[in-house]
Length: 370
Image 1 (tube, rainbow, N blue to C red):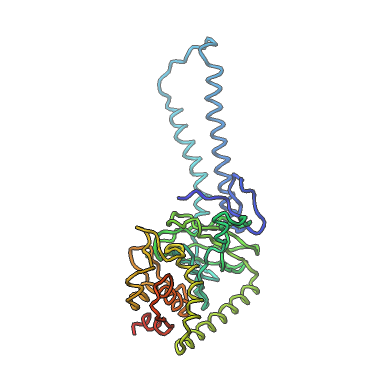
Image 2 (cartoon, rainbow, N blue to C red):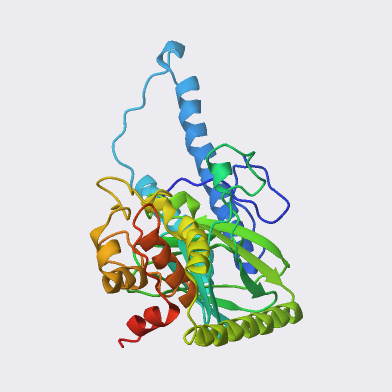
């Protein structure tokens, strides 16, 4: 597992060099902290007793003091003692640990359920009880990563669209993956769950205090592993309900606009302008801003025979991705307009100059098998 830095709990930063476990903002995270401290104290007491006896013996029973070593063999009482005492200590440690673990895994009677899907290198959130879903992508400026700009307070721990949950309600997370193994981790919730492709793991939280809580992927999931943060905003229930209603309205209108696009043709200029923006945000990290890719790793789009001569194959690979490679499926990540625009851009940028446009209806036809 990756070695990760201490993360900011909210907009108020914590000591970047703190050594102890964070207490967090949920009842469960508090239980985990108390359990951690109990185990730590027990270990310290055992260490003091064992090392104290050892150093006392070394100091006061050394040969230079003229001490003669005792000559004895076996002791039933001692052997029973050093078997029974550790057993009792382990039972004493196991009872609270078991209770906490059972509570951490109890996802029943949730008020809100969110499907969390990891993909290289972003998170997708779908509210199972509402018609709301979106991708959450790193929002740190590339110039900060390239050391051209001064790094911000939440460097690499900020996203364009955070997950929003209500305070005082039990929120269940269904965690899975589209590609490789990821791990959804928010330290303040004491939640860290692997996202495995083809499987669904469960976790839950109940946040008591409104605020912004940050985490990140805690599994080495590829070259941009460090650029996959998690940001959760906990809102009061009334504020959360208003937010959900607003998001449902926005997404409903967006779907209506997409349907209108199917009967329209966008101009080449509009497609190229929008396509360039989409390409730079979603594709340039692998295929490079100049379309030349990375030799032996990511194929070039500049001069590509598929890009220049096979429109259907080009649409298909952008929409559905390519199994066994790093090429993701963007059909669920981008709108029909964005898909049409970025494909058109790739077919006409860097000297490809096919002169062909791809419209939303062309993408929709492939997605629906028409």
